Image (cartoon, rainbow, N blue to C red; front, side, top):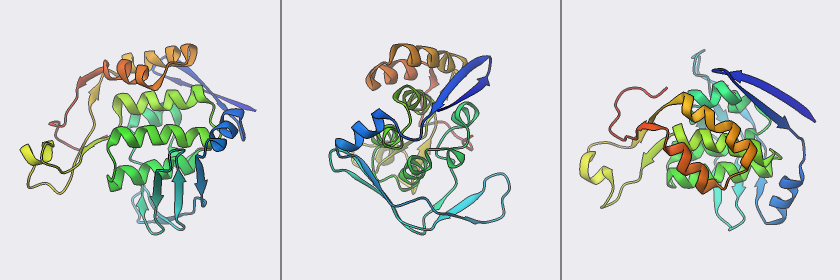
Length: 217
């Protein structure tokens, strides 16, 4: 067992990293599994936002049979997670949960499923990779409050009403970082359900979007 402590904005986050956990084994017995490994090949020359080509297909299959396929050749950069996530947890491609990170990064880029569904998938994937549930819920909290959102084309979507000329619509809400970070201790202590995390995390949002313009963090 390895315990990593990170101090961010005056808050101390203790992350317990386990190679295998009882939670992971229980999750896999429910049918959630990964197929494939993470092979990231550097491409491009941007030192600030490095890009990688996925060398092999990676599949995450949830317990209900839903498949999240990250195809070989996909270009990924880890920008699917907000800067607050990186400050608290670290860069997802440099973590012990890279398969989850790759699956989520491609889900954000491909936008084949609603953003809420992708966030729930990330949580499920973390458990399969052996991340303790309390730590997985902290990561979910950060995405629920400040993670990437997007709109899917459709007759009742913001696409059809406001953004008919856009190829895609993607944004992040503006949040009160201090209030969101203050929820970490509550998440670790109370082990809330994901719906409860959503409710509290989204109460920290100052401007929900999507009409927030400019470059995302």
